[in-house]
Image 1 (cartoon, protein in one colour):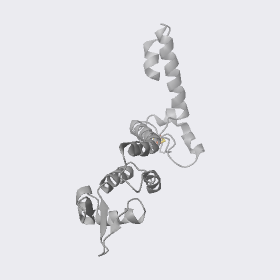
Image 2 (cartoon, helix red, strand yellow):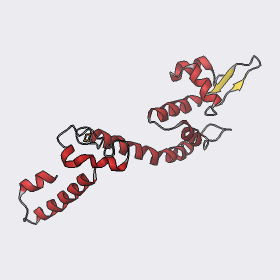
Image 3 (tube, rainbow, N blue to C red):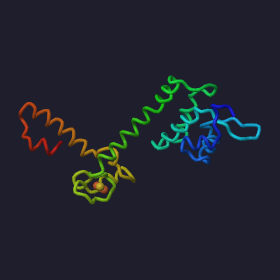
Image 4 (cartoon, protein in one colour):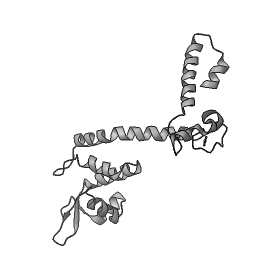
Length: 178
Ligand code: FES
């Protein structure tokens, strides 16, 4: 075995990815190996970086198809350079930014009305009166984005804040809308 090559057990041990998952990723075309005369898999060392990124992509919720498409942009015949990895990362950046924004919105909305139809918390009456969110169909419509009323209120808050800076709005009104 060439010194830079790794058997599947070595790859599993170093990457923390189970041999069955390594074989699965190979069958799905995300990584590649060569076979020895005894039909054993041998991997080039950069496979560890690919596996780490596959795991990271899965942890971030990126579908395997998209991970494969991004990995397909890397050269197959040589070890990827930093420039290759930069190009790879650009493909994921927009998607990751969108996912981060969605997760942040969900985190920030845990304590307010999410438009799910339960009408069970104090803000529901204000933000989802008579379950108006149901008109949008099934689901919790305000989970990742504010309700129309909340957005309007936030807009008013910004206007009031700007107006207050000119000295014409009472501080209590600004607090209610911020
Ligand atoms: S939290 Fe369910 S409708 Fe408001």
